[in-house]
Amino acid sequence: MFRHAHHDDNPPYAFFDRHAGRMRGILVDLLDVLADHGDFTIDHEGYPLARAQNLVSAGVADIFCMPVSARRSTYVHFIPTPIVTTMRDDIYFAAANPNAGALAAIGSIKDLYRFKTVSLIGDDRADAVWRGHPERTLVSEFETMVNMMVFGHADFVLADPVVMDFKLREMRLATQVRSLSGSHIAQAQPVSIRLGLRKSFPDAPAIVEHLDRDIRKHITPSLYRQVIARYGPRTLRSSKT
Image (tube, rainbow, N blue to C red; front, top):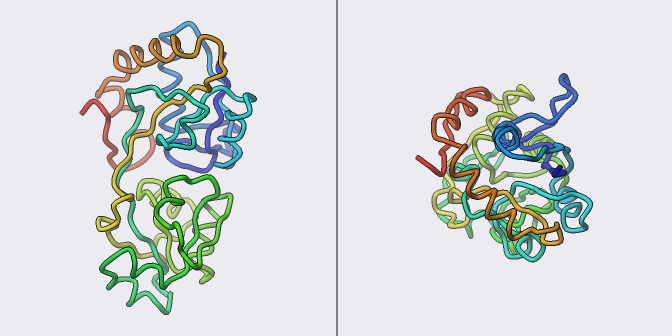
C-alpha cells in the first residue's frame, strides 16, 4: 500500500469533499486506475500543501503528485511520465480593487512588484516567481488566498485557472473577480504534475520504472478525457495528447 499525501485544497486535481468525507479529484481517480491494474492500493489523504510535502520528506507518507522542483527532487524519485499537464497561470484580482485599472494595464512581471500578492506555503513555483517581492503574504489554504484578494488584503493572485475557476464557483465569488493572462511571466507557463515516490521507500528505483510503464499503458487519452469531464467545463491537457 502507498500512503498518498495530497494537497487537500487543489480542486479539481485533488480536494477534500466535505459531503463525501473523502479525497476526490482528477489525480485521485487516475491513481485509482493505476492501483486497479496493479498489485497495490493507495490510501488517499489530504493536507495543506507544505505539510503534504513534509510528510513525504519525513517518510510518514510515501507518494505525492507535484510539479518537479529541485527541492522536492532531493527526497523523491519523480516518475518520468506526467499524470497531468496544467494550464498556464493567470493573474486574478478583485473587480472592486482600487488598483484594478493599474493591474489590468501591467506589461511585465516587474510591474506586479508594486502590488501586494499572496501565495501558498510550500509552492516552489510561486517562490521562484516572487523571489524578492516586497509585499508577499504566505498562507496555508487556497481559500484564504481568494478571500484576501476579494476583500482587499492582497491585490492579486497568480493561479492555475482550472483551480481558481473551481474555487470561485464553489465560493460564489466568480462575479467579483477579474483575470488577465500570465503569458508574460515565464514561470507561469504550463507545468507537468508527476507522481513522486520517496527515495527511502524499499526498492524505489524499480517501483518508479514499473509505475512509469503503468502510467503510459493505462492512463490513455480517452480515460483522461472521461475523468476530466467529471469535474467541470475547463479542458486540461493530457501528457499523451
